[in-house]
Image (spheres, rainbow, N blue to C red):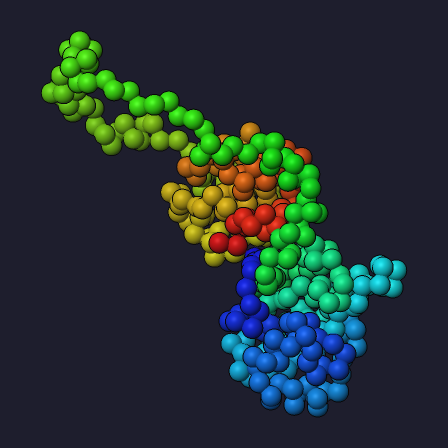
Length: 336
């Protein structure tokens, strides 16, 4: 299953389990922890009290009570103390142990907050990077729908600081179509066009000539390789299996099955580019694949410029690309 990143209130997520960034007592607190306890109701507090606490880096599961989620997986993230106190190892353990519990319970979907960000002092961009890496590794061998849920716009502003080079590349390449000065409309009247129109063939003649050729045969003669056909050919040329390709593209296997079974399938632009990244196509090849889907790169699109930046720099890590896209409030690759 693909990994999704979205801005939302985690207490509103309709998934099998949401993850609570708890403290060691499990008795509620501020931020995400307090919001989850308030939304779930007093029964959650009673169950947590019976558990008796949780060590940093570990995780425990409870019912969801009044939440849309069936379960809450509580994990205690590390407090940032400069980076020399096993913070990263403990944070990775939080994600690993939550995913282990989800697997043991046979859950189909899970939503994570940015554990240890906020009051615990961990940089939200670093948390997002670690979350991406651990969830990606888990998804290589397990089937679950995973979400990273960000509340508010703080992570976006932090991410833009992290991706300074991309911000500069966008500034250098972005074209605002609204600022382009278009020439004024011509005030030519029909009478001024009479000499030119007289030289044009009559409509009846044009229709007659069209009838001489079969539209169907013309289409068959001119029709080029479709997106689906090119994609499958590229997968074979790269020596990849179907599953390797759609996992690298962050694409659900059910969507890939639709693409494979329908030669005329028209994907979204994000899906088409996700496969270009998964196949590690250079920019010209990516343009070609995108064209088969009926799209083109445009410097009037921040989304397109970010993808172009990564491809031209030979960086095909789709999770890192999605982290950058998310930071600039753009749609993500794959997952659709």
